[in-house]
Image 1: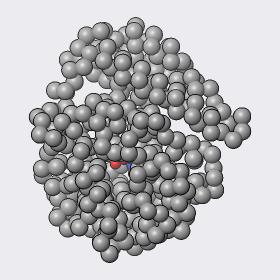
Image 2: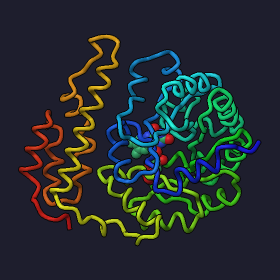
Image 3: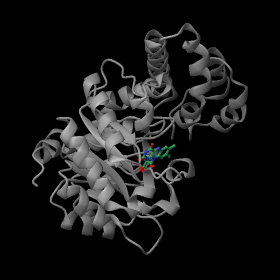
Image 4: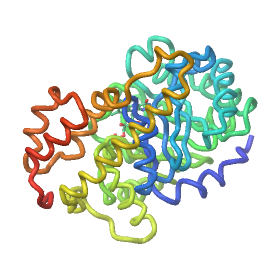
Amino acid sequence: MEPPLTPQFRDLWLKKGALLAPMAGFTDGAMRRICHQAGAALTYTEMVNAIGLVRGSSKTWHLLTTLPGEGGVVAHLYGAHPTEMADAAVAVWQSGRFVALDINAGCPMKKITANGCGAALMKQPEKIGAMVAAMRAATPLPVTVKTRIGLVPDTILSFEILRAVEEAGAAAITVHGRFAAKFHSGPVAFETLAAIKAAARIPVIGNGGINSSAAADVMLRETGVDGVMVGQGAMGNPWLFSEIAAMMSGGAAEEAGEMERRTVGEICAMFERHVAASLELQELINAAAAEPEQRRDPESVVATGFRCHLFRYFAGVPGAAKLRGEMSTLRSIEAMRAAIARHLKPTNVN
Ligand SMILES: Cc1cc2nc3c(=O)[nH]c(=O)nc-3n(C[C@H](O)[C@H](O)[C@H](O)COP(=O)(O)O)c2cc1C
């Protein structure tokens, strides 16, 4: 079956800039909006449990809260059964907030694979195909799949997965060029990504290790993939998306570090924007809460949840180590601001 939405997917999203990878605990509406405004062509939600959505769990639905001004967002779902994924797909589509649905077929975390989800699906390409087919039959949204080159070194599984999802009508496939056993670090198998791209009839999105526009450029040139997805490189560095978008439209490619010409003042301004978006997000979650006891104080949610972003924003700035050392003691946004003012010198990064 020829996937009808494939050319649109490539032209609409993949040629314009890099995609923000799904990252549990990070890519909430606030980070997605910051990255979209910086130039991300498309962003992905954190992974969301299909059964939780179908059962109407408010905790699960809160993960799909979107902010105004986010641009195109893909709902990234995990599950073990095509029918539950299709039911979840319908609910997500009916929310009217997402431009595509993505299947998680690569998460190596035990709590996910133990239930037959994430990377566990890689052993059953036909099941991933059945999920794509069921979700496509149930909704008009493009359905994509995010997977890896294999589970353990030397056993490449992504060709079988590509075949199965292509047959089922997937609009695109994202391949993280590492084995599941390697989690999120280590070398990225460019030659395998290139071979998958060469074998594919649908757009292939390459992922893994992109921390500069030069790295994105190398992946695009050496593998021929149709688009690139950035994960950890975007943490504390939304500017990376504007660098990659500029490179993709003919500008110069910059090495990591070369582009770190930002002043502490610029980083502080981005930090404030991200904090404000995070507060706005929690207000929206509170407003949607069915019971008053489900509402949480936005200030304290953000003060705790923002620590993972804070030290990444200021990594490399003189004084950042001291800030990091104090991180666990910072219990309010004001305390974060005070620690930044105390430790970080208002000079250029380099
Ligand atoms: C904290 C964290 C959470 C992640 N959560 C997910 C997830 O929910 N679903 C998924 O498919 N991949 C997840 N990933 C993997 C990323 O999407 C990406 O594939 C991986 O980090 C490799 O890209 P990078 O080298 O650019 O970081 C996660 C990675 C990190 C570091």
